Amino acid sequence: MDAYNMRILQGSDGKHIADRLKWHWNMEPSEAADCTGCGQCEQACTQHLPIIERLHEIVDTAQAE
Image 1: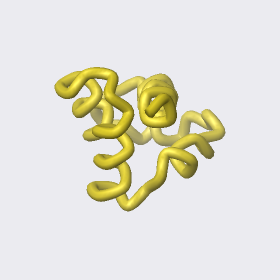
Image 2 (image 1 turned 90 degrees about the vertical axis):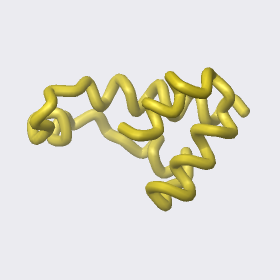
Image 3 (image 1 turned 45 degrees about the horizontal axis):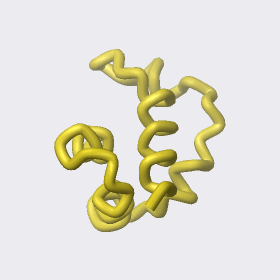
């Protein structure tokens, strides 16, 4: 959820989010948008984070650039 944290720290500038996804996670926003919302990631998350919700926010912010 590093890209989500960057969204909080850097504001809603989609470029920061897209760059973080690309260079830190080797992922394009379009790939992050492929989330089906199945919930497996949230079930496995030991921190009980709302990953699906945050992923959608990341994608929305990154694609808004």
